[in-house]
Length: 181
Image 1 (cartoon, rainbow, N blue to C red):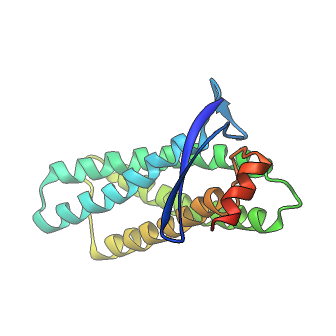
Image 2: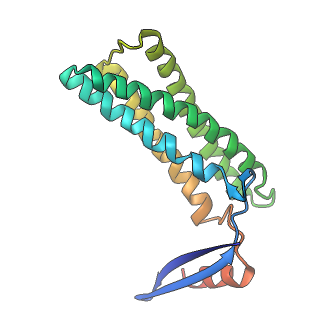
């Protein structure tokens, strides 16, 4: 069992509710869910690839190109692990919760497409490694992909915060949460 604390602001008052429960996830390692662990890597590494590519484009310093390549490769590889663990979590969403399932499908589809496009970019960068190139077109594509990744991650957050997917909240606590929102 894990302990988590939720803070709710209602009617100008701050409510802190400590709940005892566990994260109900499809894939776990020593009791810890894997999808929330792995999603942080592509979410951090892929935008960092964009930043490093932008710096490399502006000053042509090859160290930034190498850093960009490593961020791109790491973000893409961990993106595939995130897709697999997320798919396992998607499969345990109750079928009666149609809104949450639809949100999960949109979240997964959007982020999977982003990872697939980044895979193509990674393959292209690998072909020229260690002499990678950066152009305005590639930077524009990466910027759009990062924005799309964040939109998909927003949907993933809604699964947790709105639909309580992955959280085992006792009925009494759930009533408390919903009555003060």
